[in-house]
Length: 333
Ligand code: B12
Image (cartoon, rainbow, N blue to C red; front, side, top):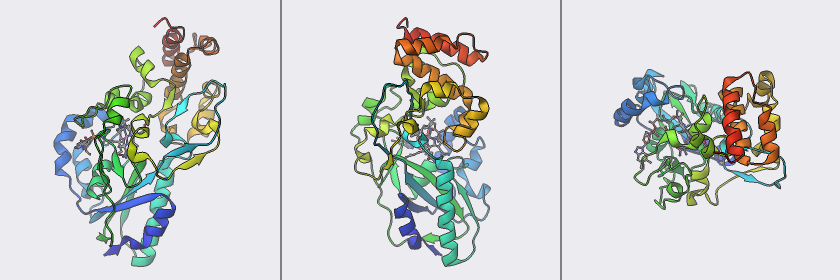
């Protein structure tokens, strides 16, 4: 038996809350996955059995430790007159896939030094199981109307988990936060992706649109606005995200990159700049496409003249996006 009390200080210091999911098989989500999992090809494991059975990933899984780390940012800079796009809070700074993975590795080291060796496997975002369902079962919080799990440190958290071959315990259960159904998220989503019966239409979600590949429709282009990657609107309006720990951001470039700079990156430069951030995996074309769309949505003269430079671009997605963004920029559409 592994008691988690010895990690409490480390977690507090790193804005992490944690819990234990005692089950390893999740029959309740099977029906839902049969209907929806294939729609998320490219984002999630396509073998449904692997998504509901932890033992298919690690045979001797006994319990699953689940962690939530706050990613809420506080901006301490002044705006300027540069042409800029916007990153969602969880895309700012070092990649949470790397940092949270490192935190969980540290935690495992602490546990091993107290309890000896055991088998484990760590996942942050890219594991086969459904992170939010694990968090719910570990009593970290419940689903909000926005679909996000609301923990004691709000919903602006990244989730990670660790399959372990031992049984875990903790003397104090985590505080399980709940949505108060105020509908602020429902009413503020510009894309109407959230409905008040808890159904979430991910294809309308601005975060999804900013990540999907290809040429976007005019409607999608207008919806993503100046977002380069991701969207946190539904969470920024959530009262459960007030008075929670934040990370201070001092440079405007970290949160609102200069559009001209993004557009000038070669593939190699893109890799160097973004490979250790949460947006690196999406690649240069999608990110540049979003930068062109941001120019269109800024609707000013300087933006329209930069757009023109992409009229003859050899990349079809960028060339076609330029045409459409120009029409948005000049108000013709
Ligand atoms: C694919 C994906 C997306 C897709 C699709 C989201 C979706 N709903 O499926 C897109 C790109 C839209 C997306 C967006 C975001 N995502 Co995302 N995403 C994932 C990913 C990789 C898989 C999710 C999945 O399996 N979906 C398939 C089905 C099973 O999920 P589902 O349709 O949501 O079904 C669940 C609910 O319906 C729920 N449910 C059951 N009953 C009820 C009842 C009610 C009332 C409600 C509301 C829900 C509910 O049960 C189902 C099973 O858990 C996970 C990581 C992972 N491996 O789990 C991260 C993950 C869910 N995303 C996360 C984050 C942070 C985000 C963004 C905030 C990122 C951003 N800033 O742009 C946005 C938030 C958008 C939103 N409001 O949900 C976090 C969740 C944090 C949290 N507090 O919950 C995760 C866990 C990543 C991580 N490890 O940190 N994401």
